[in-house]
Amino acid sequence: MEFASDAVRTLGRTGWQVSKIGYGGQRVHAEVEEHAQTLLFALLYGVNLVDTAPYYAGGGSERLVGAVLRALIETQGIRRDEVVVVTKVGPVSGAAYRTALQQEEEGRPYPEMVKLQEGFWHCIHPLWIQEELERSLERLQLERVDLLLLSSPESYFLSADSAADRRQLEAVLYGRIQDAFAQMEQLVRSGRISYYGLSSRGLGTPPDSREHLSLTRCVEEARRAAERVWGSPDRHHFAVVQLPFNLLEQGAYQVPGEPGGRTVLQAAQSFELAVLAARPLNARVGDRLIRLAQYEYDPDAEEPLTTIAAVAAAEREIVLALRAWRLWDAARAGVSGRLFFNIGETMKHLFPDLQHREHWLQALEHFLAPSIVQAVQRTEGLIPQARRIEWEPLKEAYSQAVQRMVAAVSSHFNRQETELKAPFWEALVQALGGEAEGLTLSQMAIQTVASVPGVTAVLCGMKREAYAHECVRLLSRRAFRRYEKALEAVAGLELLGVASDD
Image 1 (spheres, one colour):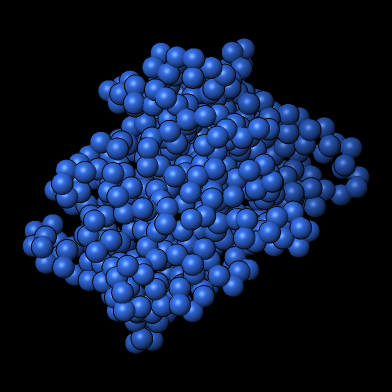
Image 2: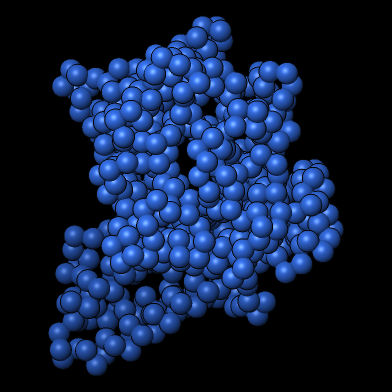
């Protein structure tokens, strides 16, 4: 594949060259083989920017990145200096939350811990940054991380009383940001990171927004931090900002929230900061989450309720057989009875309540599929040899019924979303003209964001093989000349909220 002239770009003041498409690691895990394959594919076919975080998949994302990088380096597939690894610090969840909670219970709480809700806190205190980074480096199997981003510092605003004095809140938060940046400068000095930055959904919001964060003021705090550590404000290592930017969330491009009426993208360019656009396909509009993608579906697919009834019938046959063989109580022992060979009846009630594709995929991945596998495997181990000739046809009939149900329900929601997104596709094709030729809705959405001046790279969550191929192919496409028309064309469209699966 031949790269376009703008496929590789300079990562701000770091001087590093990175691909305009980055690998977003929010929903990937070291234990999922497909995720390892998509990361491997991306790295071998031109992507050299990898974004992760300690709280992505409970640390599983960092472990995946570390394992794949280690394997490639050891086999000389790539050199370490050819890949830019980005991780973050701030949100406290999962194992990190349990660590923080234990410290508090022992009377040794971490300072400045922001308690947003049970199971999810936030902290940017220097001590937390130091310890969290060490845990990240261990998972990543690295001695140094290229970029460490201070993530979601605006959480402090959201945790405060809405009636509190905004200026006082800002004085506290920006003071904490300066201390955090000073710690990061120390980490640069010690060789544990090369540069640092900021990841925030508060960037690009109106100044009167509760979560608004000023990039200009953050740069000022970085300069003060550098003065404290290096004796010169110009020696700061603040180099990158990450923010949400997609066809429906255009604040970074549209909102003049920085001093002088500048947008965040304009301010970032003036400070020589790289901009990483996150969530290019997952648009948050009010309380809705809209996935800017279309999906293949079978126009002749069976009716979902017909296939659900077939699953229920197959399960009844299995239950009757297990009772007749006096194995039912043993098969159910120690497992949840609600879904044990009861998927069909459950789906009869669940299907009408499923609002969109993401609801279906979550139900399938987290509840239905694990319950089916558990029921079959547990029963398989109990069937005596004498009953095998009767069990195998029942198991095969059940397997086929489940496959038919999954195909029918998936096609139903794929069709629903594809028809819903047709106005987006049509608007983009009309706005982009010939530049849109051969591109999917997802590719047009990503390429539009990547074409906006000031955007260095777009982070794409390539957890599925097909999507990874879509993203990598964009490295061969030049930036859209008509990106402004594309952004204008879709800004006014209204759709029903459809959640993301990426």
